[in-house]
Image 1 (tube, rainbow, N blue to C red):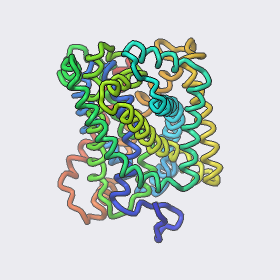
Image 2 (spheres, rainbow, N blue to C red; image 1 turned 180 degrees about the vertical axis):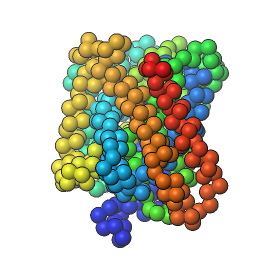
Image 3 (tube, rainbow, N blue to C red; image 1 turned 90 degrees about the vertical axis):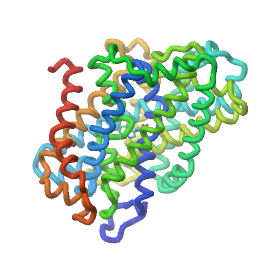
Length: 453
Ligand code: TRP
C-alpha cells in the first residue's frame, strides 16, 4: 500500500492485483484449512458442503461486495464509514459490533495459530517420526492441555501480528503472500493426492461429496452460514476497512467473485486432503477443533519427503494465518486511529495486548480452564460460536440491508459501476439479491436456529 495523492491521509492499494492479494490473504487462512474441515466433519460432510457452496454464492459474494461498497464510499474504518454514509443514524452500531467480533475472533484465532507454530517446531524436531495415528492423537491431546507452551506460542503469534502492522512490513508480507500462497495450494494438492491414494480413503471422499440430507437441521444450516462468513472474512467490517483502501477504478464485483472463488477452492482442497486420510487412518471426522492436528501428521508420515513437507506446510499455514490476523486487528486499529485519534503504534499495541489477554483464556480452555463451560462449549467454543455463527451473520444481515434498503440505489450503482464506466449487466439481479434474497435467507437461518421463529 502506498499513499495516494488525492487523499493524503489514506493508504491505498496500488494495483488490482494488490487488492486481490490482500483480500485473498485475509480470506485464506486457518478458516479454510483448520475450521472448514472440522466444521464440515461435525456437520455430516456432503450435504453441508452443498449448502456451504449455496451460501457462498448467494450470500457470501453479495455481502463481500456490500462491504467493499460501504468502505470505498465511506472512505473510513468500519465504524466511521457508517457514520459517514448515515450521519446521525444508529447504523454505526454495526461497526461497534464488528469491533467486538474482531476481538473475539482474534483471541481464538491466535490459539489455533499458536498450535500451528508449535507444529512447525515439532516438524523440525521430527517428533512425529514412527508414531501411529493413536500416538499422534495422544501427542496432540497432551500438548493441547498444557499451560505454558500453548499460551507462549499464542502470544508470540499475537506479537507477530502486532509487529507486522506497526513496522510497516505489511506491504512486504502481502508481497510475500502472493508468492507463497501458490505454494500452499501446491502443497495441498500434493497432500490431497497422497490422501486419496491411501488405502481405505474412498469413504472419506464419499463423506465429503455424497450429500446425505437426512442429517440436515437448523444447526447444520447455521454452521454452514457461519463458516461461509468466517472463511470469506465478512460480517464484521474487515473488508469495509480494506474497501476503503481500494481505488475508484477497480471493479468491486469482479474482486468479490475472484476472492470468493479462490477461498472456496482452497477449502475444498483442504477437505480432500483431510477426509480421505481421516477414514484411511480410522479416525473420527467428528472430532472437533483438533481435527487437522491429529490427521495431517499421519499423512506426512506416509509421504516420501514427509519431513520437509510437514515443515513447509506448517510454515505456510502460519503465514496464511498472519495475513488473516492482520486484517482482523486492522479493523480495531483503523477505528482507534481514525475515530479516537490514537497514534497507530499505540493503538496497535493496545489492541494486541487486549486481544492477547482474551486469547490466554481461550488457549487455557483446553486444559486449566476446561471446566469453565456453557452447555457443551468451553471458553474457546463460546467465543467461536458467538463470533462466527451469531455476530458475523447478524453483521452481514445489517450490511446487506444497509446497501439494499438504506443507501440510494443510484449511489450503489455509481459505486459498483465506477460512475458508469463499467457495464453492469447483472446490476438488477444483484440489487434483487441484496434487497430480498440475502436478508431473508440470513434472517431465516439465524433466527430459526436460535428458536426465534
Ligand atoms: N477468513 C479468515 C480465515 O479464513 C479469518 C478472518 C480474517 C476473518 N478476517 C476476518 C474472519 C474477518 C471473520 C471476519 O482464516
